[in-house]
Length: 282
Image 1: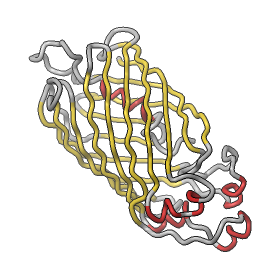
Image 2 (image 1 turned 90 degrees about the vertical axis):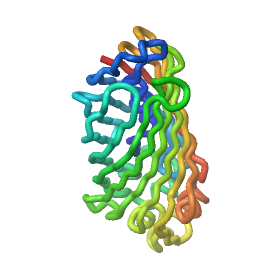
Image 3 (image 1 turned 135 degrees about the vertical axis):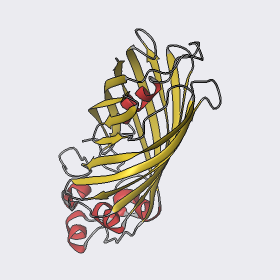
Image 4 (image 1 turned 180 degrees about the horizontal axis):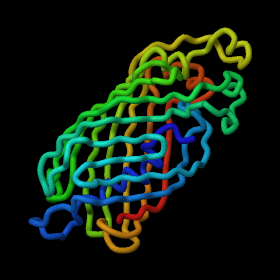
C-alpha cells in the first residue's frame, strides 16, 4: 500500500490546480465555488519508508471544493478545510481535520529485502489530527497562481506507533495556459519516539533474526521532501475535462531515521518517487 500521498498524491494534488481559473480568463470573473477532480495513477515508490528497492502501485485521488469547503482524498490520506473559501484572488485561511492510515510495513509480501522481512510486520497505524494554513491567490505570475503554507499535527490512535507527527508544508501552483499548469512543493516531518522505535529501531530479537545491528531510534526530524507536479488538459481545459498528471519527489531521511540500519544498511537515505495518471474535473 502507498504510505501516504504526496505521490499518487501527485495525481490528486495536481488536481488542486483545476479550481484555479485558467490563464487568459476574465480577471473579474469569480472562481467557481463547486468543483471536483478525481484521478487514478501509477506510482513508483520505495518498498517501505527508507528502502532502496522500488515497486509500482496504483492509487486513487480526489480533490475539490463544494460550497466553498475544500477537501482532499489522496490514497490513504484525507483532509477537509472547514473555513469557507472566498471566490477570486485574495487570502485563504485554512483549518480542519486530517487523517492518515499508515500501512508502512503492515504487509511484508511486497518487500524484497529479506532482512526487513525478518524484522516482522508492523501494525497499521491510524493517525488523526488537524491542520492550519494560509494561502494567497494572485501572488507572482498571474491573478490565478497560489502560494500556501500549512502545519499539520496527527497522532496515532490505534496503537500502531502511539506517537505524533508534525508536518510543515509549502505549496505553489500556477497555470501556464488554459490547458497546462505546474506546481512545486516542499515539506518536512518531525516524528515522535514511538514512531522512531516502531519503524526504525531494531530490538535484540529482531537483530538475531535479520542480521542487522541492534539500534534504538529517538524522536526528531524524520525527513524533508521536495517535488514538482504538472498537469495538461487532454480535453477541455484546466476547469473541466480529462487531464494528464505527472509528478516527481525527492525525500531525504534525516537524523536517527537516516542513521537506522533499516535505512543506512538495508536501504538508502535518498528516496525517489514518481507518479503518472489521469484525472477528470467535473
